[in-house]
Amino acid sequence: MKVFLISHIADADGITPIILTNLVFSEYDYHLLEPSEVDEYMKYALENNIFDNYDYVFVTDLCFTDEVARIIDNMDLKNKMHVLDHHYSRLELNKYDFIDVIDEVNGKKESGTSLYYKYLLDNYPNDLLKRKSIETLVDLVRSGDTWEWKKTNNEMARDISTLLAYYGIDEYVRKYTKFVRENEEFYLDDIDKTIIQIDKRRMKEYIDDCKSKVIIKEIKGYKVGIIFAELYRSELGNDLAEYYEDEVDFIMIINMNRSISFRGIKQEVNLGDFAKLFNGYGHKLASGAPLPEGLKEEAIQYVLRGIK
Image (tube, rainbow, N blue to C red; front, top):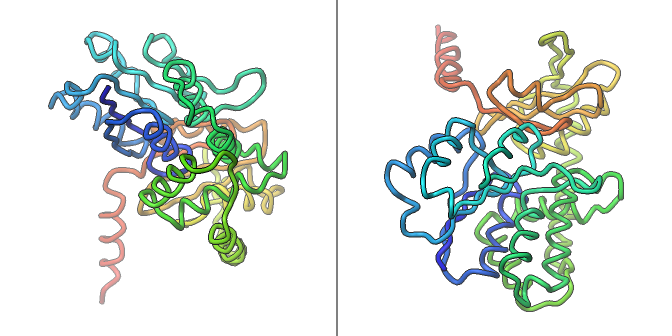
């Protein structure tokens, strides 16, 4: 069986499904995307028959819009495609048989990785998938992505994202695929621990520096703390939301090289709904949106206008 995997490029919840695919299927290809790129890529793939040579197509930690879902629903492709996403703002797409958007089960938050893992266990079980090492890795990724680790104080869940950032996608996939194949239990080795210790100091310095650079603006009746930053998206957003709790409703992080992120700690503010104003989507306390088209060019022109 030859499989094609489409997943999220930005975090461990999008990358770890590659490891799961490797453990189950001998032949596979994958393509990683930002949420804002999914519709465009799907239309390109459909026009160019990219999926024709694959027996199954999985989409994890991402979902396309209703427009694309309707197109696929009228094609034979729907019989070999399965979408596994956990962003509640896409729940309406569960009306399609090939899409499963599941935010939580029995009060436990799910992630793209955990949903894909359960699907593979139910449909393609093998000895590697049943190992404690991969079960633990999957749950660490889930806990880190949903920020459950903050409640349970399981810092190893956060550390997985740190290791992905340092190793990069290819090495992360290679290292932990090999690890699961060779180990029954999951643990961090000495190299992992050294990287994490160094990064914790670096992250603290970075976040402390950002605290003085927040710009507060009112948007649609909300007080929003805005910061331009590229690193530690989730940790930065959460820490700034706590630091500015009495002054802002949530934090808006603008990464000029990638996207816009919204992070908050106040239950009365639904950031999944707010992100829709920017053509984005996500969860109640964490969501994202694409950069406005042409933003970089406008920024360049603005800077050039200052030349005397």
